[in-house]
Amino acid sequence: MRIANLKRETGETRINITVKLDGQGEVLAKTGFKFIDHLVCTFGKYSMADIDLRSKSHDSISHHLIEDIGITLGKSLDKALGRRSAITRLEYGNNDHHKIESAIKAFAIAFREAASGDSKRIGIPSTKGAM
Image (cartoon, rainbow, N blue to C red):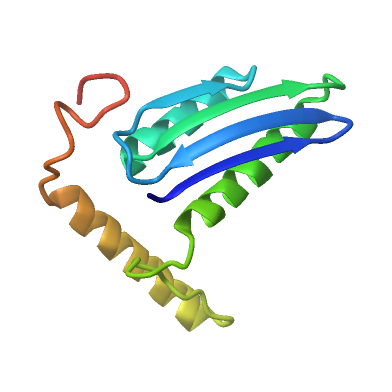
């Protein structure tokens, strides 16, 4: 299973996260920021990853907590991907041609995924329950 459990504690924050890439899109996000919770829930729902994210600020400085949430989420996704065998990935080049080409590839893959059926998904694919 592609799962990662990480803890990050600094003088500023404490973050605990569990990510299960092959999940059902079930998310519990308790960051103290409704918008960040919403973004994490949206990511989990649309990626079909299960995420349990809990965080606490030690210094009440918003950007410290938001920054550490991003670092911890990124590291947990990296760890859960493991050896990256059989995944779809895109190269980002060092010139404008390759950057634009990568964006088109990403859009094409996202469109293919969005337009295809998903046997794991039940109901309307929306965090609000309607489209």
